[in-house]
Length: 174
Image: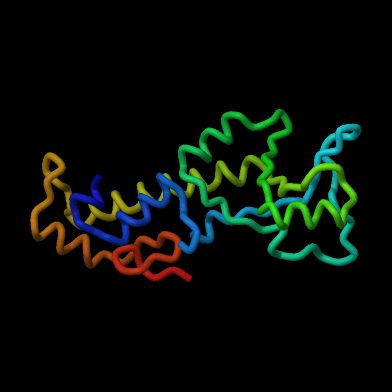
């Protein structure tokens, strides 16, 4: 709401992506990258390592972006299994290719610790809080959620908050 009222396009886009998810083709911020293990469900033994790697597993298989909206991530956390892990599916083609290589009866997924998803949500909350505190420290108060032209100008020049890979009011992030 504040980003909309201040007319800050970069922050509006970021909040929309955080709320609705990051669509294909939109770069997902680095804080949304998770690391896990490639495992598959075996009906006799439960979750098992899908492939025994002779060296380090390929980076694109063990690191993924969690592109879902924050409400979907929150729901995943609430419904996590008792071991505190979540499984992210691979794209169909990748999953079946790995399934053939591993001789497993089901397609593997990336098993990640629940705490990594909690960390994403905490980071989003912190970024929003940091930005609003910064606005207040610059005297951008928004009387009754109405911002003056001067406040809008100040907000458009603020560069100390870094969110993902956006630039402009949010700063330049590598």
